[in-house]
Amino acid sequence: MATKKHDDHENYPTVVVTKTVTVHPKPLLHHPQQILHLSNLDRQCPTLMYVVFFYKPCFAYQNLALGSIFNSLKSGLEETLSIWYPAAGRLSLNQADGKLNLWCNNGGAVLAEAVTTAKIVQLGDLSQYKEFFERLAYKPVFHGNFSQMPLIVAQVTRFGCGGYSISIGANHSLFDGPATYDFLRAWASNSAILKEKRSTLQIYKPVHERGPLLVGTQHGQQQLTKLPESGSSAPTRGAAAIDHLHQLIKQALAGPDMKFGGSNFSNTGNSNIVLKTFHLSGAMIESLKIKVFGGESRGSFSCSSFELIAAHLWKARTKALGVRKGAMVCLQFAVDVRNKMVPPLPKGFSGNAFVLASIALTAEQLEGSSHEATIEKIKQAKNSITNDYVIAYNKALDGGAAQGSLPPINELTLVSDWTRMPFHTIDFLHGEAAYVSPLLSPIPQVAYFMQNPNDLRGIDVRIGLPPQFLNAFSHYFLTNLQ
Image (cartoon, rainbow, N blue to C red):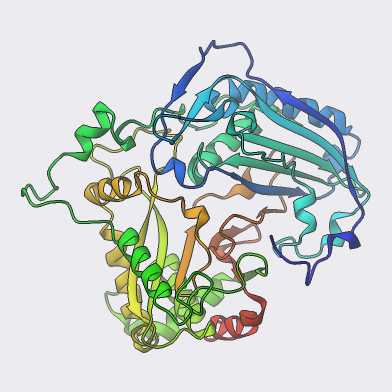
């Protein structure tokens, strides 16, 4: 999907897959075949989402054979799948309503072993995406039959220098970010490579049933028909993120070309997106706070690093892309609703439990708005995510198109916050990973906020942009940060 402009993976040595096995749950617990009904939140992006862990050469495992590491990962995955059993299943299309559900059939995950003569040092800055990273992932070909596609795939690759990468693809219909993080922590703990198994690791037992997030079931319907939290009988308001998205699409269709791909839609599509990571150190973030709020004079106003950087990024991206002043522009960001529901979702909930919060302004209003005013709108959008909002959002998705099918829209800025999921701390091998990089996603223009292993107060911002706008975005985004 990304072009080979700055990184032609043919410049690197090849990656040779030497073994591929299907991994089934250990027969510790017998889980009969069953259909696990998915929520509308689960069905939005039924595709594999990949991350790749990089572990630099280490004395602790320099003499450890690749086969030994592969077998330990396989054994750990077998044990993990015995508890996280839906991950060994397949998606199933309900012919009656055309919706996807999860068929828990113990079909298994796929684990591959590979080698390359490349050295990790050749990859340079691991935070900067390279097409070569895609070669480190096992990618089954999808022929349109969900029942044949594994939900978990992984590949362990030994580099010529003795370092390793471990890539994992998890179907987004199965897990969201926090659930993926818990699953990978459990797998690493169970694998016992160069360490004892840690049965005391603080991971809640996973709860796989989607419960109140289901539309149309008895339990879910009780949630969907409850009165608003205010106690009034007024109808629940719509979800702002869905309403704003519809307005953006209408705005694009009303543009000069009156069709998708017109001037309001990015005419580059996904085929010409460049992925770039900007490292914002803790000092840079603090410097921006001082410049925005005037140091000690900001009084009682406070904000999180996420709110500050999201506001700054929205303003910078909108200006860099040259959106016309009168156009509606939107910032949307994912919010975890596990504790927003009434009652809260159970600890260990393993499905998708996020909705998008949304703010809409005209481009002129956004440019004229101060950082502080924009941050205040982000706070308001966060606070708007209530049980009623989740219900309205979930119902609006019923029968709707998947987000993954939406073409890039210059007026829409999307942010996903990974800073509370320190993937680099997951020690599949010895100690923390040198870096964990998300691979190319179906919506490459999303900005990911991630922890940096070497600067815990800083934030790595990974964003996809058309190459012709990269320099302008870099200029506007880094202004006031250096």
